[in-house]
Image 1 (cartoon, helix red, strand yellow):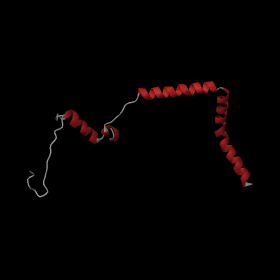
Image 2 (cartoon, rainbow, N blue to C red):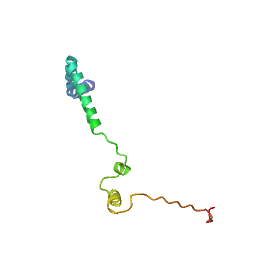
Image 3 (cartoon, one colour):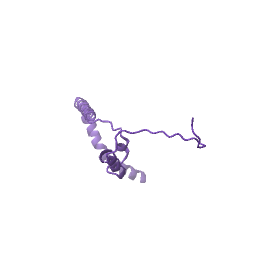
Image 4 (tube, one colour):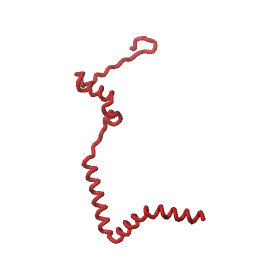
Length: 103
């Protein structure tokens, strides 16, 4: 019948998938100290790698702009090669709605 064929097909598919997990579980149950030590060692190693390579990138151009794109290259030119002053100069323009002087 369809039900028995379906059940056999599912077992044929799941058996090779489940078998390695069962072997791993049995091995872990027989040697728990080895697994606990290896998991702790792996976790500490990943933590050390993360701390050693951790840095913050807070420049929005570096985060959001594709590298070697036209806007990034133009920005680098303005900063490095254009000889424009590095300090920004603020200016303020106050305009009256009717065009009159503000006093």
